[in-house]
Length: 249
View 1 (spheres, rainbow, N blue to C red):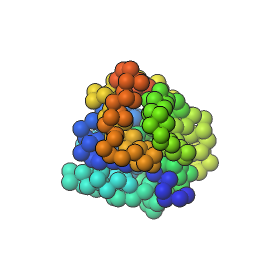
View 2: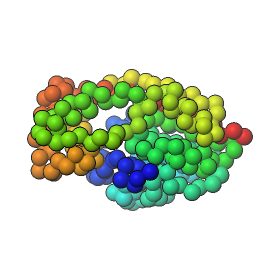
View 3: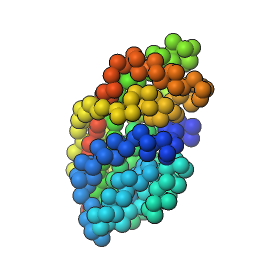
């Protein structure tokens, strides 16, 4: 896959820590589903600033995180975590991990089959993979409001998708084809109040989208204000895809 579309996110760790703390907080349920055990070695795929990686370590497991954002990796490393700067599709781990985890990250990774293959390869036989990502219909109302405003201002929203918001069946089918079994994947509607408002969602969570649309930095705050007016509330229409699966023993 073209590297330009392999990942569509653009992150500043400081901005994310300021307005995105709710993301790892809501990912705690997915971490409970993984249930890391003392002595296990866990791979955190798309670990970001390591907020949940720290929880894995606190439960007595050792953890290795991978993320494609240099800013996020720097933040996680400064907290003393073992984090590697790399695209998840390029991981070369081979049978090293008892379990793998991912929260709010897989939907940014458009080279999804290579990511699935890399996670499968990284696990020991019998290893499990659990986590959450955006699912079918995720943030549809907010994304439509943003694109409507981009068009109104003369910008062309990118033709290529920014995210893989998969139906549960499509997600399960992909991971089954790379070798996983015992796959449980389901969609969960989770409307979420954005503490810092729609404006921050636009400027932080959709920075990569605005980059690709060619929106100058100096125009983004005003654009975000109008998107917030279009949406009319700070309630984000999140739909999560929660999953658990195993590599056959």
